[in-house]
Length: 261
Image (cartoon, rainbow, N blue to C red; front, side, top):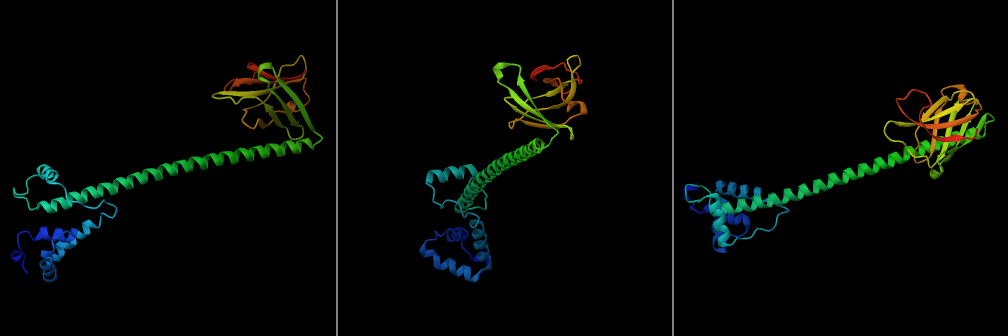
């Protein structure tokens, strides 16, 4: 059957057939066209392929006359040379609405997945940081236990110079390994360019000797290698000051802890 032999509204009827809203009296005629005419079959296939894009869309419903008229006015009068019929225009409008719902839902799910991924990455970073902290704490503990079993180990007690802070600690030195471990309590971490420095005073008349620098953390344990052998020799007094990282190794910083002279 040639397209010219079909009625003028045949495409509207095919659209109704695709939507499942074809009147019963037209069903037999449309099925006959589909059986005989490849052009009609192709038209139906096009509608069905587009409708297949709406698996999550709301069921299509026939709009009221007023809403229909407003939509027709917005898109232009189909009688003015347009090849689209009102019914097919409604089909495409419904498809556009359905696609908007599907894409909007997919976009929401995508944002949720991104948020979940970011939250998981933050949790993994926190777990990794805690693991690293525990490894360092275990390393310091092993050093302390090893030090306590060595005859060359010496332990010094330091006290905060400000009684209000209740800061105190113990410095463990390993003479044969030039290692130093400070176990402190209530010694706050320093931010920015500030650092703690340890000084050893060999005797009453000598100037303090620079013996390394460190920062405190939540474990209260700091470990470093002494810069010189004189730092692990028995001192007259030990001092801890707060200095800038860029300051020269001179005891000019604010004193925060000291051992008994």
